[in-house]
Length: 246
Image 1 (cartoon, rainbow, N blue to C red):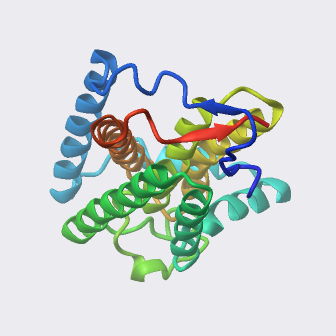
Image 2 (cartoon, rainbow, N blue to C red; image 1 turned 180 degrees about the vertical axis):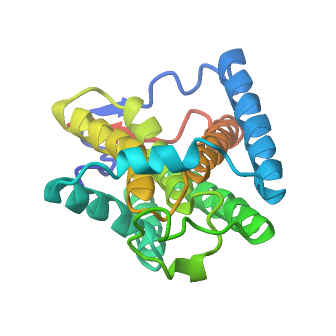
């Protein structure tokens, strides 16, 4: 983990975050994408609250579950395992702690606020909508008794992974390129992509739950990044965070 988040050193070359001070205002494209994701998330939530059934949910799950190889099933288990409580709480706390003790205090604060804030929104939505999880009578379900078969919308694993690993990916993209940075970016990206497939494959979420998770996670990640940039520009001059080039 130390290699993922190298400590600052006053006696070693440093590579400041690139382009971070160029602007605090989000670009028009990202603003449009975030707004669109917010609207789509709201529409999905309303439809699910009204107990609407999406015709694509069942065929997608059935298609994904046609993969019958042991290695793929084990990979899906491995991807999903850290997203269950209490593991996800420990993991998110560990990420924040490592960022903080590495001297990346603004980054640690942003990660903490993002994970807690977006997680709270997801939990409130789950409680209000109270959507039933996929039935074992329709698809294969790894844990039929998960949350007593309720609280399916949105997919909490997806929201958590985008918030946690998406922000780390954002930070990594602003570090000097190296083979270690490349591995980090690949791992973070793979976790974000595969968690959606995993939740569908395990039969614990519908595809619409996963889509909502990606939408909410993306909006939360954008808000976290914009808040982080605003706080940096508002209270840090010059920017406080820098990474040791390794």
